[in-house]
Image 1 (cartoon, rainbow, N blue to C red):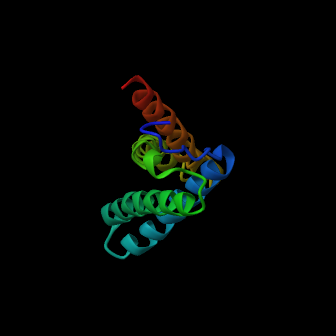
Image 2 (image 1 turned 60 degrees about the vertical axis):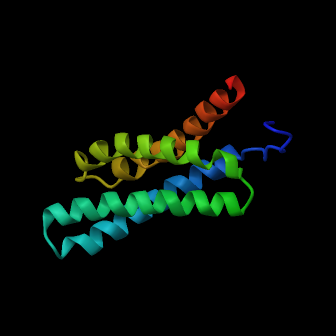
Length: 125
C-alpha cells in the first residue's frame, strides 16, 4: 500500500493467460497484415501486433480489476521483455505451431515478473 491507496490483488493465472492469448493473437494478425508487403513486413507486423496485443491485454485485465492501475507500467515492461525473449524462439521454430504458441506464454510470465519487480521497487522507495 503506497500513499494510503488500496492495492488490487493480482490474479496471476488469468492475467498470464490473457497476456499470452492477446500477444499471440496480435502477433498472428500483425503478421497476416504485414505479409502482403513482403517478408520483412511480415515480421515487423508480428512484432507490432504482439506489442499492441500486450497493451490491449493490460487494458483488459486492468478493466476487469485483475491488475491495479499502479501495476500497469511494470506489467507492460515485463511483458515486453517476455515478448522479446519469445520472438526469436518463435521465429526459429516456425515449422511447428506448438513452440511459437508456447513461447507466447513468456509474455504472461514476463508481465507477472515485471509487476513483482515494480512492486518491490515501490516498497523500497
